[in-house]
Length: 349
Image (cartoon, rainbow, N blue to C red; front, side, top):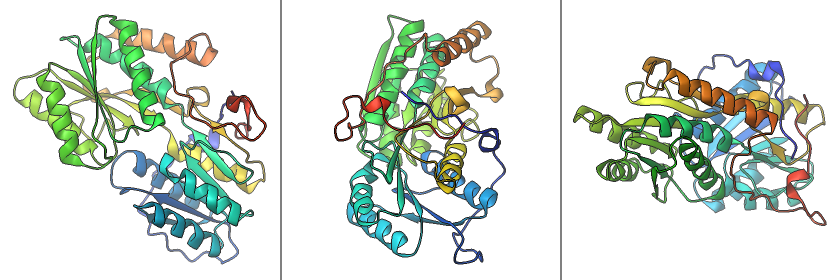
């Protein structure tokens, strides 16, 4: 399997201001667009992609634009609209964009379509396989160490392979530290339903869970609120962030976050696309600092020092290839290929 290795310039993120998608750059400037299926105010998955778009505009001077699209018909319309408008690189940020990107890729062979957590690769359709499961495994180790009840919880949005894979890895991390742990799993069927996420987390808390992770988007606010209310009522529950460093979203209850460095990844994709060096699929992970587990410094001591050392050792083993984290291989093989994991090339080192 090839791995994305981020350049130092891509890893060094900058402070990003709000962006409207409107600018005064010349019409012949390279143009990059982003489609998200939810609001970029989610402090997680979509926010990270939006920051990546802004980083491309700020760092490379490219024209940028963002559109929120909610239905498959809107996915198709947006891809076509941006391609007709001269956008050469278009990100569809989520597994749900794969079919629309494949159709648009056939219609616009000179436009590159990048699908986050995509499953299908073509000459101009590039999936990025985020190795978030590796960071989720480390978060699971922390959860297994800090749970007092021996019960941990997982609240997800839609049960797609990439989300399910993070939970499989999290559970493996939990059991690496506490083999007898009980692991609860709930998918609410929505990425953004705040009330459903809150109720799902509350239900797991009522069953005794005291260390909970999520894989939702805007629904995170309900998830964190459920843990906050449990602590206010005298409980000892902790929450884990996902997809983005969410430690400052609810610093009173979050013990750490499993993070994808989406802005740096998007910038690297744009750099390689601009240089004519982008091919796919692209794989990311702990190698190259594309993902990581980030403890919350505001809760210093919540994860014991010896556990942090064990997590550091596990991180080194994953990078070295001596520890393989369970995952779901959902990448479809290209025509004539038998091993999808060996297709494509990493982004430029």
